[in-house]
Image 1 (tube, rainbow, N blue to C red):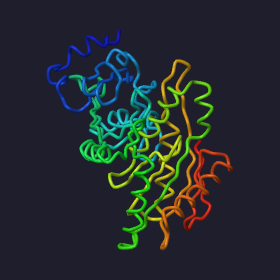
Image 2: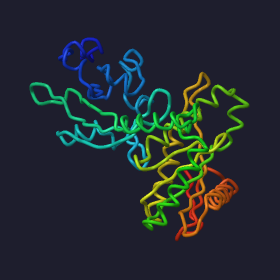
Image 3: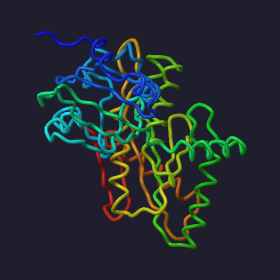
Length: 317
């Protein structure tokens, strides 16, 4: 018995409907070989139809990660879960864009059955979960105020300073916990030296897009300078901060930039602190910088946190 070709499988679907859906959609056979890839899937993921048809979805295409940055393409694959349960499965995951950064999406996976009830394949639809309208509005505001880093799309250093001062002012009024995270790409000079500055710029954009895509709409990201980024996380807790930063490090570590020599993957180190009464912007930045330095000294690909769990660190595996 021969397997259906991508063309014949696609022709058997209601193409007019599928091709015009606003959400991304792809269809796989029982072995997870991709047989249909919609235009919206191309738009959201950057992967062109001719690049993915006939490939297995776990072979470097989307590489789903859960909200904690853990891989899903093995036994926890949403498509396989839907096939096992015989029902639709919904979840929020991060997929890999063709350019390497992670995109948060909401997905729905469901089994597709033959007339006799046997499994024919699976279908997954997904919606871009990024905050397009809010981000576009914020980007326009920052551009008007010349507070945008032109390379990465994050705020620039001046924007970061302004946001830190606003956070300090809000802290005095509301006494909420605000986290400040200084992140630095590990061994970035080696990337520039080996692959050139154009590829280095691609890495900076990938890291910025991955970080921005996994932060809340109330959080703020700035490129502090060079390969260093500043994240401000208001309305959080000291217990939650290590989990959030650990997730950021995992997502960056499991992203990458495509290159003729192979995918370039990087890690980041971070210094994590929380606003304290009487802090100034300079004191905050200095404290986060010192913690970042400790993380670098202790092996990189980890963070140092000076909260209640003083000295907490995390290293990716």
